[in-house]
Image (cartoon, rainbow, N blue to C red):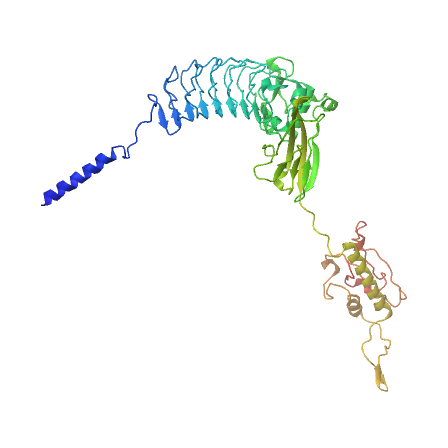
Length: 508
């Protein structure tokens, strides 16, 4: 019987194993149309590092991220992306592409990222990037680009980051950016090229958010006074593209490679530059100070009416109607920007972008908003009135002390009522005078010496009988501060024995 039970158990286990390998099993099957040696995982397709000279013929339609980097691709045929309607990212870096050609990306209307870095591209034609209307990031660094068509980036209206560093560009049009709009563009990397001439006026006309992401370091820039003042101002404003790479900004002092000097470390070269050359380069940003919790309205002031108005927040968020993502900023129908409840995150530079048939495409207006905390409520009693009241009370007390000295007690009683009569007393010893002089003093009478007091008080001492004739003599102490009159002391004359008494405070 035991062996029968064991046999039944084995049969049951074998049936479970067979079921697991079927269509309902747990072992994954290979995706449909996955190229040989490539890795397919859900919507990811990686064929990187396989030494491919041509793109695989069959590509899975579900691929949204295609990686063909680190291969030996030399050409891309037109229409090769037609099956990949869901493609969002295409990585072609580290190949041997030397030319793109027309129609290569015509079926990539949903592409967001295109990596063409570390190839052998020498030029970009007018139609090489057609069909990339939704592209946001374009990586072209570490190529051999020496020429860009004047309309090379035409149609890339959603592009926010363009990397052209480590190429051989000797010129770049900052006026129209080779057909590229500035509405969404935040990063423009032109570092490590051969730019030897840059129109300063076109640089100064760029929007503030683009200046913050314009990388020009490691170029043979001319040691021009206007360019120096412009870059110095950008550095002082804290624009990261300049401040983060300040040591890599070079210029040619004598138009020869051996005369390269650092822009911001050899300022003596520019010591003869007149600061008047820097005036008018940039339209000064309008300074606004607003209290936290208040409302704020910014208007886009342009030379002529604009057809379309957009704003860029200090957090580099593009603001169009109805407003920001968090709802704290609204864009009104007339193009104005409104903030109903100003908070610290609203501090910074707001840039207005205006476009129209009679406006330049990058005409801007900038506001530098500073947010301040509310001032505290005024105190119930003003300090000046409090001081005046204290002085008045002190004066009354002194007059009462001088002209109505306290009686030690009733000496005689007349009939039914007791009336106090003060009898003349013998002169008080020194310790008694000191005790009387400290009636209004905050310092105890048993303090060892005057040097023990660390406060500067106004002291009124009882006048001596022989030298003062009942009058108060004003004496200036040795530590009297001319700029602090409250430290003035009223003391008896040097002949009076009471002048050695302790300092007493009436009111400060």
